[in-house]
Length: 486
Image (cartoon, rainbow, N blue to C red; front, top):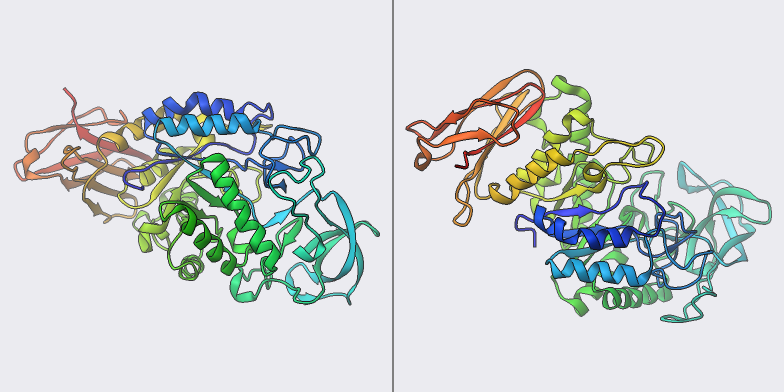
């Protein structure tokens, strides 16, 4: 699946709320195939709090833009019919579709309920700061607009472990719901920032409750059959009981086979935490390489102070390449979002060169970098440069990889090519002044003339008798050297 694969995250935070996103995606399918996209990660396609909701304020997982709920039939992105039509069109071009699945919480309950809860310290959720008392929380979900179609399951307070609002007193706090077998997920099964990071937002789902486990597995089967999606991007897995994620994965695998793809979003730049999560899942799912994203961000902000020979320290791509989904930026890291950590524009070509042209990892192209970011502070896209890198990825970035990581401000690597794509390529990166790398591309290529496909260096390079080339790079730039096409 990852064989020179390319995933595209087909949304950014400020996509227009015009209900036309699934239509745009459908119309774009042929073009995506032409540039080498092999899978598309779509935004959450379920009914949220209202039609402006990006899909993370999740209300009803069974409503894909089909029922009049929360003041709208469509979601921000369109209707169920348009969603299915887009998926079908992508499949025609052999593009897999990965759904963004939000299982951590529910929002926009239909009614309040009364139950006992304790307030906990937001900085240490294992520490109670009140006795148990009765609150009125938004925890009853009956989905009146859907009227029991697909599932008659109703959610009640005992299906949740926490909430953040007491209607009776209009008080905002983190409330842990009390009752038999109630509490946060075990410390061992969720991230331990803030003592226990089970609680993230809204009404937090309790994945130790047997009815919840059963209903969620049932929903996943329904959703995959209903839409034909090929995989899941699981949102916020560090806040969800890891035993449940294992169980869900096994349930999906039993019904749909091992080829169903799952990537988890575990936002943590400490490699040891990602490794322990992979351990808990028997390495049967992939994770986003958050460590690499932060390295790219740091490199873009530190300029020549950043030592490029350490670019892959603490990354999945270095330690668990088979499980690494690599990305430059996404909807959470873009400016003014919760995990803002945006890679500086001068470094974007370098960063995409790193994820597209390396042998390891399953790279993701971000919609916002390719089509631009909207909203109050729009950001221009890097489409022309990305198209060139994608062309090289598709035509040249194959075969063995040899690294020349011997200078803190200038590194390079070569790809040898394979039987089908024998040419290979040579990549050089600088984060300070003009530099060069003498690199071996193969004796069989002696006398070949190489050019910088990105057009930054105007001179050509002739491969010598021994199969080496003297490959240049401009300051603060990337050059991708390929055999000159006659």
